[in-house]
Length: 149
Image 1 (cartoon, rainbow, N blue to C red):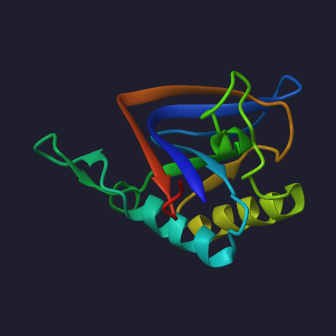
Image 2: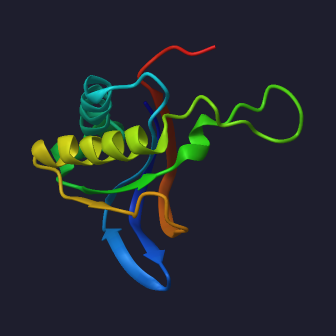
């Protein structure tokens, strides 16, 4: 699985003009299930996100995790993280998981984060969403559970 993790002061997601998910200080996590991923990949990714030390400590250094600071998460499905841009001008997305698998693993990832005691809100899988965020830092980290070509 892939994730683009952004440390935020706040973030929200709208569908059809209505806010369906939001968080205060914490993380916005854009997540994509890739072909061949399973629940163990979602669990590994959730653990990495929860323990990623990208929040400031008392000395201003990035030394604290989401678990340490008690922050929340807004988790958004983002199949375009599977984009293959190696050839041509149009990205290919054939390495993304099939939609049914993608939804299942996206939901499993969010549940795995919540099981660690992290407040989790989500977007709507497959919907046209408007995401707003205030990136804190800015801090943006790319995570992938597998080495890929």
